[in-house]
Image (cartoon, rainbow over the protein chains, first blue to last red):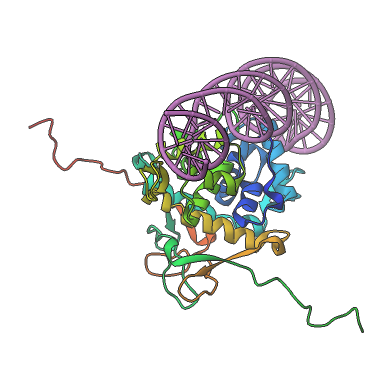
Length: 161
Length: 161
DNA sequence: CTTTGTGGTTGCATTATAAAACCAGATGAT
DNA sequence: ATCATCTGGTTTTATAATGCAACCACAAAG
């Protein structure tokens, strides 16, 4: 956006995520990476975005610890972009986006792919949110609570002794 | 973004979702709506965005069938913005974003809220993706498959007879 | 030495956003 | 009835991001 109100200092974790990966290209780049793309050219060809923009996006993703640069892999002295655990952690977000589109899009017939489990080749189930005791939850079953305070006392007051 | 490359015609459901709700404000508006906000003024105050922008966003969300306008609710002759089922369907996306932030953010201590299940008041579990036979799946356990074709033959060839 | 891969730089067009003024209809008090 | 205020916007103007295209540069591959 423009005057990016920089949700960086916002206490809402959703805003924080959006601040990190909430632009049009970043999530798609991560999608391609999860799909197997590693090289600059691969991303550029599959996504069809301008190279300078890809450059900026890749660097931002590396800076944020979502991608990392690895030296080689094939013979060439170039580098490739690999997902970090943080990057792979984006997977559920992508699945949620996909499933929302599958369920509510006005033209679902234009969606040409389905997400399947590799072992059986059958479509996956919908994402599920459970309570700690295992009940399946919907939005109406949840609430937001203030956090008790991260670490009120450090358990040992190193200052005083 | 600017020249919104309009992923509208893209066959990737993730791109399609992003095209619908992939901007900074829309998801936050939906978050507030799930949280209970209904009125123009409520959204404006809680999000602190300019009124003209809120106007545009709200209208876009209504156009997309994510919000709908309902006549009243309290006495006043005003309108309020209510989530449609499509809008409530965004909930898993917000949860996924929240959990990603909770798990990978560099400053998780700045997150001041936790998502709990209303009945017990305890934190929810992480979103889970299962195969149809119930196995818990990670990204590595999944693959993308071309869709068999929505409706290859209509079952009755109305043209020829 | 030519091609390919991997970017960087520049310039221009488009657009989202912000900020503030303005406005019409409803509400509320006198 | 009237005046002031609130609500829910619209309009205008200015600016900052972003997208895109095109050209440049350098390393490696052949």
